[in-house]
Image (tube, rainbow, N blue to C red; front, side, top):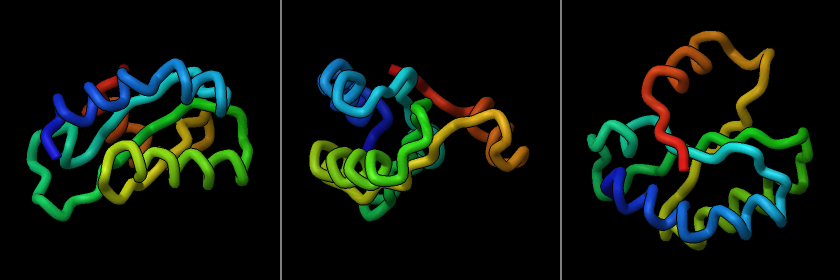
Amino acid sequence: MRREVALKVLRGHKQELEERYGITRLGIFGSVARDEAADNSDVDVIVEMAPDLFGKVSLKEELERILGAKVDLVRYWRRMNHYLKRRIDKEAYYV
């Protein structure tokens, strides 16, 4: 999936996802964000939201449905893995 396609789809569902899951920030990182994704690549999605395991599982399933691809969903938070946080900070695109 191309970066602009993923961002367009997420923009189209942003308000609905914010209202349903309490998301305060939504974006992509990884191979899709770098426009290096293969046809079978997953979409790495970054969200800022309150900790909610069941909400995160439901959100992941909904994102897979609307993007039409597997999703690796990461919740951005203060104490997350420093390597991953730096990588996200460097390459993320937010909607």
